[in-house]
Length: 334
Ligand SMILES: Nc1ncnc2c1ncn2[C@@H]1O[C@H](COP(=O)(O)OP(=O)(O)OP(=O)(O)O)[C@@H](O)[C@H]1O
Ligand SMILES: [Mg+2]
Image: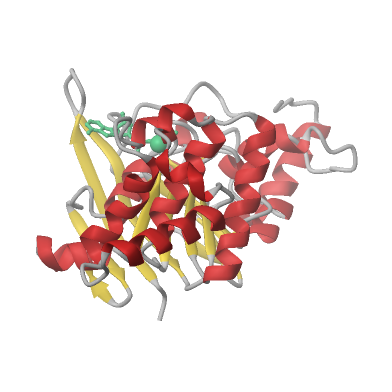
């Protein structure tokens, strides 16, 4: 049994300050096994954070099931959900904004224990907080400091300490390194990988940048305008991307590799508006250089392309050939 199973979840919003409906997440199914990292990749506005919030039940899905440890979270009441939250935690992008600036680091990190481990007394809590601070690479005496007295990297370590202190089995990481400097980013990625190994954690790692998650994830799901367009083992998806959207996301990364022979691909125009998403047809059709009429007439489902590698593109088998043929015929995609 998978640790997390999303089955056909959808979430729509009324467009902010305007007319229309935003189809932020549209009929998404995805699973994560215990101890696994699944990277959720896509441009800004593709629905990644909404999907993360649906997993955490910070948002209610309009449709579909969110099963965690075999339980459908959408059926739980507030008290039942609170018990589950100890094992289902989150780390956000902006560490400072997600930490109460008036609370000491020790209080921030022990707060989840007060909520979830009520049997623990204050001296047991204090020991646990110190251990957890050390585990994330902070000195135990950081407990007395305020978040504002710490660097960005240290603040994110506090966010991670708060997430792991209740022994979760899954953590949703929503762009946990995007606001950090490059060198600090690498340290936090190493810490997350170490914690995963030591504690057997599973991660849903949300990022707009494939190169951030490439070395810390086992599987990847590529999202665009509310839908997952390609999913599979990281090495398969990166070496043999089959959806033109995945190929486009990889193109900037591939350009740094002199041995890379895959043709590059650039999409037409900017990310579409989620209020204009059509009910049928491929969401990428207006931007796709490989589009044919059949892409617009019916719903394009994720289908197996290779073992564990699913692609929502009716031309998945031809991606490389089609692009090679068109690049040798002089049509430029990059
Ligand atoms: N509460 C809301 N009300 C209206 N629209 C919303 C709401 N939350 C998200 N959206 C819209 O849903 C779409 C998906 O947003 P989401 O934040 O999930 O994208 P994202 O992939 O996380 O983007 P980013 O990389 O910028 O964080 C966007 O068009 C966004 O404007
Ligand atoms: Mg987001």
